[in-house]
Length: 320
Image (tube, rainbow, N blue to C red; front, side):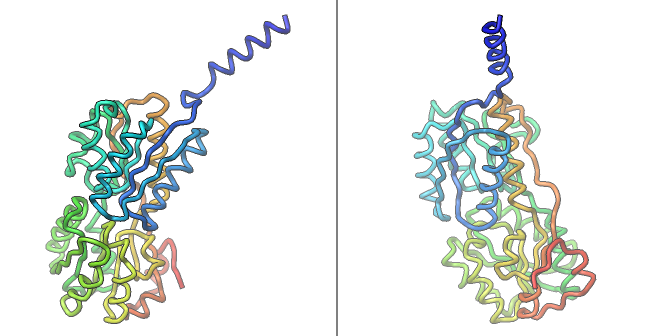
């Protein structure tokens, strides 16, 4: 009788075990290394760990090189992962192309993260019903609120400069949204482009004298070369604002942005559901929720921006 009870208990334990009771191979295609995207990966990994999902990660970083991104996508296909995480639009697009061409990858889920406009980038046709094996979490930025944040600091703003990589689909979308928001408020937009991080310094110099402040959207190329931009803005007393809060401690005056660690955890929760059996085709694209205002008082002083007590009270974090 005792032996039968033990056998029954063992069977019950096996039946209660989660669907992910194995070690999953998860390949990561990350476009560039910088705090926001690194935070996405950390949040993703922590979420799966907390859910008890055992994972073997194959992490690849293209360092903002599109040719390398394409090579990584091919490498990942050879790794035969159980799931792929693509961090940033260029990586997601490259991986999606490989998935469409490699027959053995046809059923491998691809979860994207830090993607501004997944439908505009043609990663999915329908946000609610993605179809196929691609879905994920978007960090679409409410550009009207970002411009409003800059104008809270600089009420007399007439011209805002923006630096972006014209080769990044998400950045082109954000800049168009900035143009629309600026037009509604009677603000002029001056643009400068940088195809790679090494171009950021020259792009920043080209904006000096052409604008009252500079805004950096969630552009991976520019954010990875942010120190060059900060240097120019400090020298020129040109206030610098950002679309991600991780750029504030690096020298921006302020940012109204998402917590990219939580963004990663949101993507990780989606991955857990899919690994447990949910279909990517029927898993709606999610959008990052909640925004924080972070302020860097030292940067504000260097760049000639007055931070009122009212603004400090609104902030989630104030760096001295």
